[in-house]
Image 1 (cartoon, rainbow, N blue to C red):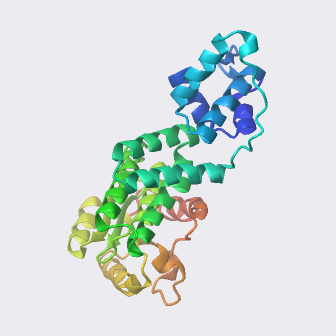
Image 2 (image 1 turned 135 degrees about the vertical axis):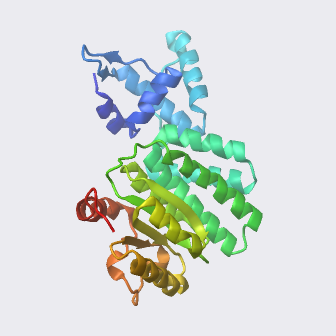
Image 3 (image 1 turned 180 degrees about the vertical axis):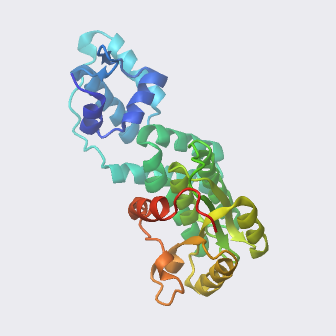
Length: 310
């Protein structure tokens, strides 16, 4: 008998996916301890392994794979004898790339319903964090590159970016807000039209309980100051992808800082990644998202205590 964590490790399937397959599709029915914890048998594990192979290797919908499994089990025993697969199980990176390619192709052909269905499947299969970091974000980067290189039209770039951005926005409202945490304003300054990094960082802050006012790409300066004042913003996040916008962004930071001397900032994006002459290097955020949690605990939660004023 195996716990859900053991099965997840054995099969490389997130626990959230195992629960979803059980609750939504009755894929397997594990036994339960007196305390309610799941216990999986060897047969359960082999059934889950078979389902994963159908989903990953044959792109079978999980509901259809479960139907096939139950139909096979209903046959006489000699008609369904599972045999070890000789086909190599793809790595997680290969699986992420496969579903990313399918979503990208669907969006490229303006097949929004199919793309949303694939994204929903990916959330069930891989979990939210993995889908965001390993699938959706690379797709947004790929879309931007295709547009810049002339391989995607303006209409295609807008359609693809808008659909994926909407999926990001949906999750803003799923996480609880902790009122004692400093309120955050996130934006790209005028002239910056790419917001992938800003979206991802804003979602990271929302997951950690911060209230984030997200203004998005190409935000005019004139409306920023009233929002900061009226909403009692304590942290402003700005993102640029072009180094050519760094001077303009730094000047905006200076003007905000002059009016709100105790304001804190996060500066990010590829425009700041290799900046050598940035005015405020101490506020440049590490590019890799794996370092954000350390920053959050070191700077946001400690240096900006509840009740801090301008």
